[in-house]
Length: 248
Ligand code: PGA
Image 1 (cartoon, rainbow, N blue to C red):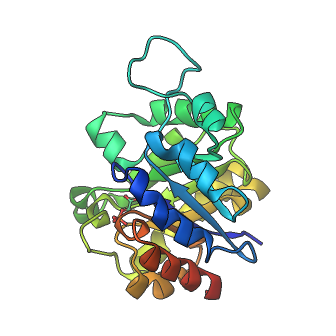
Image 2 (cartoon, rainbow, N blue to C red; image 1 turned 180 degrees about the horizontal axis):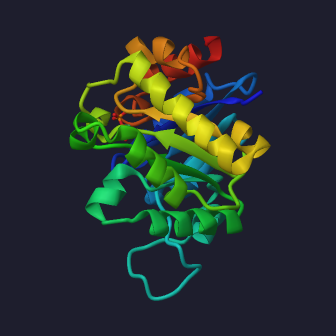
């Protein structure tokens, strides 16, 4: 009932040459059961949208400002991303929460800006290692989910990405039981708050997903796909992850 989603986050990587990888992804992506999304640096959104035009790969940004326009040097608005050809935007990635001190309230406002411009918000949440080790994972994830997700969230405008901070770019992955525990918890919270729409909102796992672990992660309950960093930069890796999701 929920379509699966393979989402890539290129982070601060890639100039025009990187678009060759995107071209190779468009050749494998198909819309049968898996949606495919690549979130490029802002400088590439327009060209990536052209490259992916007519294919099953959607293009997204990695952040947007909460305001529509104004004196915010260096920022970009959701309207600008939409104008450049994006259909999605990541909000609240842990690197933004840490590097730019983004709070749940700021992330909710950015997600609302996304909705106002018909962008799908991919809202990221996840605990730090210290929070995991002190037994606060569900508290932290629950608080971030509540505070970062706008009341207007639906299955059509929102994707949640659970990304344990300690698993991002580290090669460390939670056990499948740990992933299941958090994803089941997120699903229960979404249904409690949004009813049927809470069933429709997709919940991705993110953090060191690669071709070799994708299949087992995609078999976990309430995992509707992945948000992939490093392994989304190479078509050979990301295409294998798309295939793993197609077969899950
Ligand atoms: P990673 O990053 O796949 O390189 O761990 C995931 C993310 O930060 O979205």
